[in-house]
Length: 195
Image (cartoon, rainbow, N blue to C red):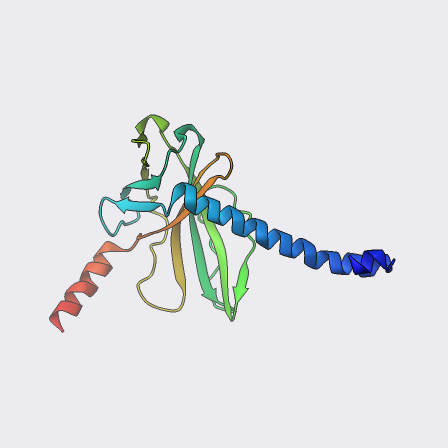
């Protein structure tokens, strides 16, 4: 206010205005996040088994607090791969829908979204008792996609993104999916039990 009333140069007002816009954006994001928790609680994904493997079928149920309009629900699976910067691991094209996520770098690790696929959702299968809504999740895991590694610095994360448009705030939830090479995990479990 002092800068505006003091008739400061426009670049000074713009520079100070940027900080006001950032603060307003942070405040708005906090309000939306709080509303999301109040309206939908913390959504939970109940899995039919653990782990799943490429070539199998993932079956689960997402439980959300409150009433959710099933016709507004959208589900998407993504695979994000994190490798060491300068790693010899090639950037893979795993198919699926076109991804637009830009690589992000943290420390010396680079994360890329290598796969994205929208899951067919049948709204008639959703149930609600007024207090909670149950949303079924079921899809075939393509056999050509890589499982998450059990060891090493490089990682592959399978993630389910669940959204539902609503007023005053939309439902948004993310769940990491346990997609592993089942034979490798069972072998490791047996080796651990023996030692």
